[in-house]
Length: 370
Image 1 (tube, one colour):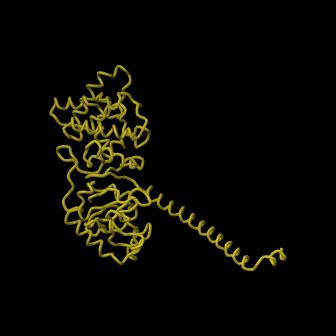
Image 2 (cartoon, rainbow, N blue to C red):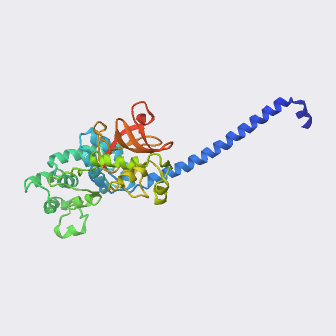
Image 3 (cartoon, helix red, strand yellow):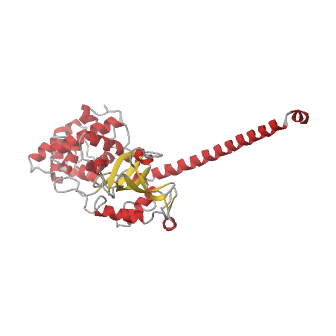
């Protein structure tokens, strides 16, 4: 072997050695990148699975992760069918009661779609037809939301019954309708009280307490006419929108981006933030709680507040971008196609979201007003 090496010109030996060193370096770097990538994936997955509830619009749906994943579809089909976005949290609560987000028909909309149970086997079709049916029932109920919810369980006959008996939903009417219907069908043996407390009333048709069952998953205000209440004045997009921008600007040049940072007071004191923790901090400075310090993510932020058409966004509105994932980055709109956020290279800074820019190409149209 020594003789062979002596026969090889020195320059080739040096070149070969350098090539081998280069290949070894690339192999080591690839291993490091792979390990780092897996760590980052684990961190991102952990961030996503921390979600406990959500919804858009005026109220908030306090639902499982299985239901949460249907929020984009509910928004999509609410827009398609011309239903105001403020009803999405209610529909998420309804889905939670119907299926918990499990199965191929999470909205349990087969019967309204084709007249029989089990004809829908596509979750997206279930959401599509469920939203359409919800809107139809809501309109027939003259936007009496509680009447709409109870009719989603009882069927359209309950609306006619209510209209002949005062014109608006009451728990007493739900019980009496259940009693009447049960007398018609109890001979079949197919109906049993889903609630023990309804047995003494013989109110065993459907769920006479369905409204309460759905609303236990919803936090918000329902007005006298059955609609979700309008957002209180003073939120982002109003004078407080300017205030939250002013608060956020105080950190420009004083922070650095750290993935997962900003979730402890020591991080905040040291100026370590990521995008979602910065947004949470900025709103906290103007007296608005948009989530716990330790658990805020882009996914929890997008469940807050009211959905706004991008054409109508104002300073202080919260904007989302599809980066490493859908809604992977978030910031606060400041006007003139710019937003204030905590970015990887700059820390807290104002960045452009105009067409042709990095964030302009990744702005996904999701705008929320807190």
